Amino acid sequence: MKFRFIIRLQRGFTLVEMMVVVAIMAVLLGVAAPSFQTFVANAKIRSVAENIQAGLMLAKSEALRRNENISFWLVDGLGATCARSSSGNTWVVSFDNPTEACGSTPSDTVSPRLIQTGPPISDTQGVTVAAVNSDAPAVAASCVTFNGFGRVLTNCTGGTTRMARVAISSTTQAATTRALDVRIDNGGGVRLCDPAKTGVAGC
View 1 (cartoon, helix red, strand yellow):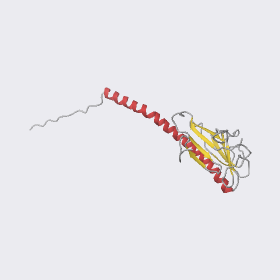
View 2 (cartoon, rainbow, N blue to C red):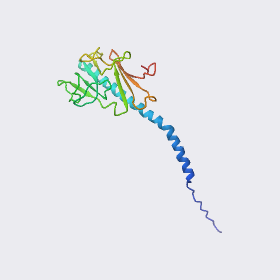
View 3 (cartoon, helix red, strand yellow):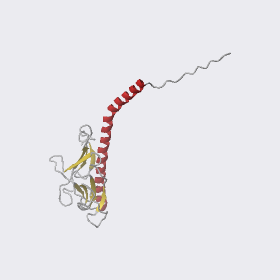
View 4 (cartoon, rainbow, N blue to C red):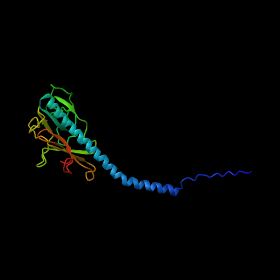
């Protein structure tokens, strides 16, 4: 009895098949890439907004804990030449104005009696920050002071206009991303909201 062994060779991909697969992948990537970029930009906006909200909540909680006036300041850096800025790329929580002393060692006695500083929040992430005293008329502001009851003073320490709203948006994809606001009301409430929405999530 004779046995026949039939060997079937597995056929690989042809050049045409590979070209079709590459073309399909290119189309899928072309469709998905803009959505992914928007997702990443929105995530950066939310991260910055939550960072600012956390700094404001820290200032409020420290004011309550110490029963003293504590301020949140937007500043343009943490070096020896730092200045307050309504579009600052980081923040400082302190008793006194931290201008030119934002990188000081935390202290309850040495000016500016700094409590804590925040990480970079705008220029390194493609996000812009704009703080104002209210919606209309909008006047640039860089600080807000909480008193020992957790309420907001009419003006910051030093008598300057206090912020009531911090708008956070994308510097690269403003048309397709969702901007967010951090709002500070007179009672000391700090909340994150979407200015394009109404209701609970809106501003």
